[in-house]
Amino acid sequence: MKIADLSFLVAEDSEFERERLVGMLKAAGATTVWWASDGQNALAVLLNAKTSVDVIITDLAMPVMDGLEFMRKAGHSGYRGSVVIASALDSSLLASAEAMAKAYGINLLGAINKPITAQLLEAALIRHAAPEPRLHAQSVAGRSFTPDEIVHGLEQDEFEPFFQPKVELASRQVVGAEALARWRHPKQGIILPAAFVKVLEDAGKIDELMWVMLRKAIIFCGTLNSTGIESTVAVNLSPKSLNNVELAGRLAAIVQRHNLDPSTVCLEITESAATTDLGAALENLTRLRMTGFGLSIDDFGTGYSSMEQLTRIPFTELKIDRAFVANAVTHEAARAMLTSSLQIARQLKIKAVAEGVETQQEWDLLQELGCDLAQGYFIARPMEASVYVSWLQELATTSTSMFTSSIMSAKKR
Ligand code: C2E
Ligand code: MG
Ligand code: MG
Image 1 (cartoon, helix red, strand yellow):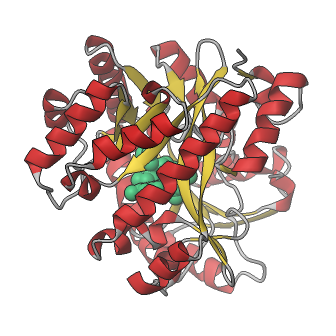
Image 2 (spheres, rainbow, N blue to C red):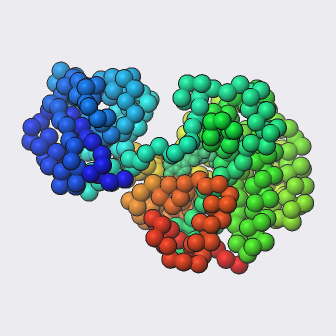
Image 3 (cartoon, rainbow, N blue to C red):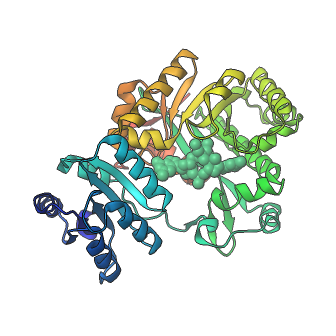
């Protein structure tokens, strides 16, 4: 992303702040900068701008139309660019404005406490990225798939894992990868899990995806190991799949068939609203752990992935939700959540993984706070298997110029 290629809209009632902000953007290389002195004018600019606005920087407290209403109306008008909130309000208010913006579908890059500095602004702008090419979450785009369409895709072998590396913060070594489901749709390209996981769960068909993902991820992990790259693999399990008490035994058999140690496979579980058969879930999880599989509590800190789960399930890893990682740099409350999640992991003697690390600042903060592992776009996006292998090979053999990867290394046996 080059700042010169983006167009900006600054909504700020204080003339002094507005001029400072516009000046800062221009100094950073911006060539197209619109401005408005309140939300209403900003909305008019947004709706009438000849070229589309890529990034809005908005104050919250403004006369006529405040920043909250402006963001709601921008969201409802179908605005697809990004927003940075810049405000002098205290950080808990900023955090709630931020949550509101996201709920209205705004792609929020961050909320900055005034006075804005060039460094803070740049840190937020770095998050502005074009959407991943060819990746669709169809349910978000309007049309969703029916269970039959998805099951047909599964039968046609159109589903596969993409792999995203997990890196040790202290050593910068890649220790494993998370397998994320992708549907290679014959007509619509690559489809993301948001378009099919819930549909399958609701239709009682999620196990079909699970077995495809487990088999493919385990085979891939075996192949990596046989080429001398020591790696773990993590697969996401729906809590609904824990209802069948035979899961643990079947999974152990697959791993054995591929000559892998169960400890190289980690199962990531997010508790969902629909409570499952608790007895069966606990039997499966206990047996999986007894067999040596890793167990990860995914999205820790959000709705249902809670402390209560930690007390009854023998997890080996705690994955801190992206929301706390992303906001920890700027928000006290998120940083407190992050710090205490790390403390809990340390006390339970389990690994802490930070999800969704997108910037150098987040990486530095996590390192400073003593987090064990990191995963996120800052390191690499999820990649199809062959691309992931090339990525690992490149790390191992050359010092590449790929973003941060020159500082990472693949773990070799
Ligand atoms: P998750 O397990 O928490 O996976 C992390 C999600 O965050 C992935 O989205 C990943 O692509 C995305 N991500 C990773 N790094 C970053 C980053 O730096 N920034 C941002 N903005 N996002 C990042 P994805 O692949 O769309 O998957 C979404 C969710 O779908 C997963 O969340 C998981 O709960 C579920 N899922 C994925 N594959 C499977 C599967 O095979 N089975 C089941 N049951 N659920 C799956
Ligand atoms: Mg996961
Ligand atoms: Mg997660």
